[in-house]
Amino acid sequence: MSAKLKVGIVGGTGMVGQRFVDLLDQHPWFEVTAISASANSAGKTYEESVKGRWKLAVPIPEPVKNIVVQDASQVEAFASQVDFIFCAVDMKKNEIQALEEAYAKTGTPVVSNNSAHRWTADVPMVIPEINPGHLAVIEAQKKRLGTTTGFIAVKPNCSIQSYVPALHALREFNPTQVVASTYQAISGAGKNFTDWPEMLDNVIPYIGGEEEKSEQEPLRIWGSVDNNQIVKASAPLITTQCIRVPVTDGHLATVFVNFEKKPSKDEILERWSQFKGRPQELALPSAPKQFITYFEEENRPQTQLDRDIERGMGVSTGRLREDSLYDYKFVGLSHNTLRGAAGGAVLIAELLKAEGYIQPK
Image (cartoon, rainbow, N blue to C red; front, top):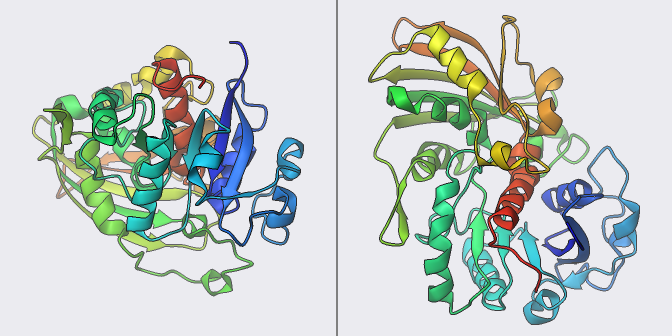
């Protein structure tokens, strides 16, 4: 590949923005050339703007330290400097919707980590291994926005990555009912233990809005493209509980599932081990070679041991067994800020590039 695509990060000083900065350092296709945030950070170098609140264990990449942070609200000026943007802002839903559409209308593709556009009918919400076909609605979205090159694509909620891939690999058996409880790391709230000491030795049995997202977003991912919009699936019926636990990174799920056609345990394990998607076919840079890894050990997957599998982009499962009320139960695990947030968005951008949706301006 020739010159790297120029990337802008809107909301680059927050935790997810920091993940983008780290993941894109030395990326073979993309290079961060511009960063924007709130007006309070504008005018400072990136290093100055995150001083005292850099949340990652690795140091700030050298190439971005001296990039001068710009005001995210200066849409035209910022968009003119880049080929596409990642958006990870902390704003009200209607403000995010307006901001992302404004960027798209400049002819700039937007890959969003935010939830604001997840239910916009012509905006694809994508797990690249599962529903790459939903990218087809982008053409209709462009027409609505009045642009030939700009559009919005979004990443789904981080918690569903811990169980939706495992269920998707079994779709041929028609899952009908799913009960999932997720045990979610504090980084999902943009926090670490230094700035959230109340989470030490504590569990909070509520995460605002999370259960509705966890029950409904899988149905949109499993939905179909009809008349230039995405129509959500009607099954399976999903109910969830989402709990905040004292873990830095990694969302773990306990899952119970009924099937219309109950598979054998061997059939499930075979489908998990063999499952591949479009990112694996294209050998995208961030794609895990083994998307779903099953652990035979009774005490795996463990959050601390297994969240970084496949550079944090893989999903792990374990403890698959038959149940007295449901056909099967199992445990799933994914890294919430890698596969679930910034890494998932980078993989979407790689897919969009490979499929011709993102090109140099």
